[in-house]
Structure formats: structure tokens, C-alpha cells
Length: 147
Image 1 (cartoon, rainbow, N blue to C red):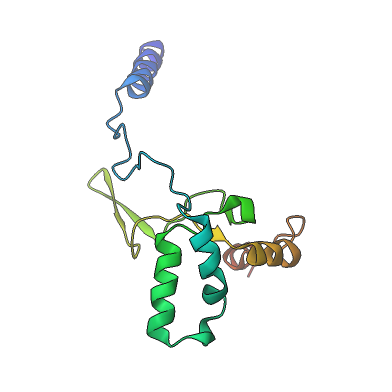
Image 2: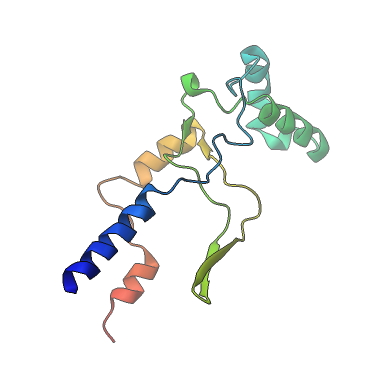
């Protein structure tokens, strides 16, 4: 009887592993062309203004910043811009288990994002947040305490 139970459990596990996936084959927002700066000369002309917001009235600065972002000027890897290693969520995902089923709700402000770091910020991060000494995670520190 025990052997039959093990065979049934193994078969169930195999069926779970081999069932077809229902994930989308393509990302619905996938772009066919690379999203890189289209006009590097124009991007270079915007950089001094974007780096000095105090030089313009807010509405004019926002227009220049919009151009800078819209032209993907920040995606200039050759100039030292870096990305995070992974895509970041913009809010929590809450999972619940009810009536034998898992369900979840995403509470982000918008879709997940890729964070880009300017050369200055990246240099600051490398200097002030060395990989050899990561900061302690407050939640882990609290849960590790014995009361």
C-alpha cells in the first residue's frame, strides 16, 4: 500500500512538472528596436540644463527634462550610465491563500521599472555603499533579536 502511495505521489509530481505553461510568449510591451539615445548630439546639448534645474523656470525645465527622458538620453552606457541588475517593482504584491487557492494583487504605482544610474550617482554608490559591507536589513535585524 505504501509503495502504491509513493508511485501515485511521484506521478502527480511528474504531471505537475510536465503540464504546459500558460505564460505569454512575448512581452506585450516589447519594442522591436533598441531603446537608446536616437540623437546623441541633442542629448549632449540637454545635459547641462538637466543637471542645473535652477537655471530655468520650472515649466521650461520640465520641458527640457521631458525631452531628455523622451529621447532616452539617460540610456547612454558609453557615458557611464548603469542599470540595476534586475527589474524593480514599484510597490508590494500581496498574496492570499483562501479556500485552497492562491491569489494575489499588485499594489505598485505603475508597472515594474528598470532603474538607471547616472555616472555621478553610480560613483557615489560604489564609494558609499561598498559591496563588501552591505548595510543590515532593519526587518531582519528586528526578527533576529531574541526577546
